[in-house]
Amino acid sequence: MLVPRAFYRHRLPTRLWHWTNAVTLTVMLMSGLMIFNAHPRLYWGQAGANSNAPWLAIGPTAHGGHLVIGPVEVPTGGVLGRWRDQQGVERTRAFPWWLTIPSGYSLAAARRWHLSFAWILVLASLCYLGVGLANRHLARDLIPARRELSPRHIWHDVVEHAKLRFPTGAAAMRYGILQKLSYGGVVFVLIPLVILTGMTMSPSFDANFPVLPFIFGGRQSARSIHFLCAFGLVAFTVVHLVMVLLAGPLNQVRSMLTGRFVIPVSEDET
Image (cartoon, rainbow, N blue to C red; front, side, top):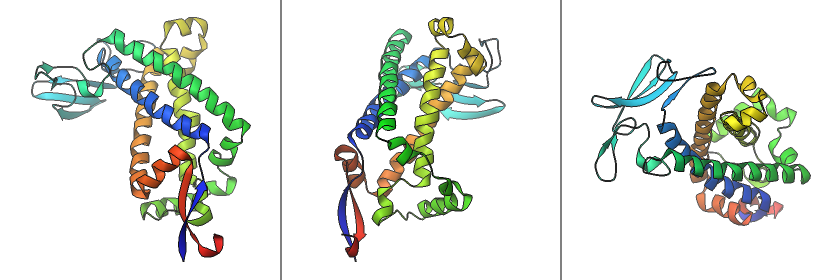
């Protein structure tokens, strides 16, 4: 017979990192969309302007808006490219007012929001990595063991998640391989790339660290990578929230607030 039992799952640094990121990345995304509105096109290479062919563009059409990715054009109706503001006035910018900070067009204000919270992200990331190395959280919880990387083990975890079969007992106290790969991808890939490509787009950082544009193939390539990583974080967040809802939101949110996570265990494990 299974009975509920509470375990201490998330330490304080992990919980602080989680909620700091939730606020910081939300503000950075929304202010970043306003910055993107100033020139809603993405290019590869060193330079890009209206005369160059973008690989991605968002803009108005006669009947609404569209998203263009290479040769593919996707109509966006009244959501992207052409939309109405709070007063019902039609606007022809990439992202609507309710997705941006500030809601009214201001490139200068958006940059202030974006850069202010970028420093919070950098400092929080350095603190998290430092503490994670010291208390072995990174090695213990985020770095997969060799046996976990076998295709058979990964496929088994995929099937179990697809069938909504979540771990019980001692297995629920550890991250599964899909959690390790997704969380590790955020911590070690997406967030560092967002920070480094953001630095690459800054002329002052370019002057002091000229190797950055070389690494990313130019400032416009860095801007494209920055945009793709930002939406990679959005995709991760959406999947993460869906899994929280499916696995039990009360238990999941409580564990990220208090550290205590309730799991069913057999009576002989209590």
